[in-house]
Length: 350
Image 1 (tube, one colour):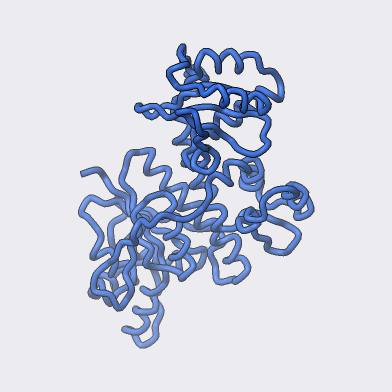
Image 2 (tube, rainbow, N blue to C red; image 1 turned 45 degrees about the horizontal axis):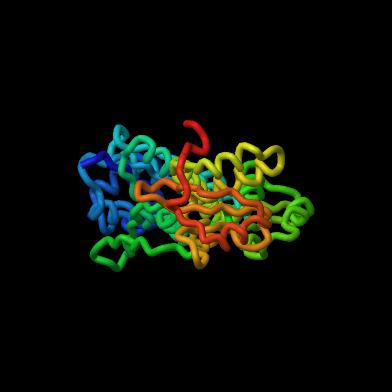
């Protein structure tokens, strides 16, 4: 069984329960709070101990995500003391505080960013990773669950009245990743540069779909950035994009001849289409199967270029034609077939 890392959102139920059992007294230190956790049944001690009593394996590693508050640090420290420093570490989430505006923007974005960073890091180390989204603010639980669903990571939750922990079903999240592919330039600009002036964002949004605004938020009206949900969706899309980059693309001899003749903006536009072609979401939204041929074409509309292609049995993509829009109908009228094409070579070496 592979090593497993459990990412645990941490709340303050341990402090509340300590006070209830100690005449309203607050714990003076993480060691004192950890002593209380050891002496108390996991169900009564805290949300984290209750859920981990159902979830934890002997060789699991634990990462506690603590809020930027004294209470959050205290609870996370006590949990690390309880489960052992050698198997635990604490990740403090900047901006995750009791200040409403800061929590809504900075805190939740930081939580999403931190969770994505941890999930991606554990996957690179080939460790199994799960999220225990029981502790913390209710919004923390919601966004931790969203990250888990988007990154296909198991998410567990235990309500205080439940006897058994539940794993949230991996339901498909309905979002058009093809839309993100078409506007990746804008989203990367927003994600990489921090808050952007609202006027500049409005200029870049001109002529783009209104749905993109659902991914944005503004703290003060003057600065705009990706919302916490927008950040989660875009980071999940970037993971899918990275996976798609590993899909081999081959050009037929006819497609190669057309491609090699391209220069400047034409070459850039076709390269952009070939990159998007590898993304399954983009193909589902943009490809069609015309009559009289046994392959697909993409994209539709009045885009200046068309690709004729099919997905081979080995998962690679075979591009048969790279056509200007005006030549597209002519090729279809001829009723070409896949068998008419040969001499396939990689689009890009390596």
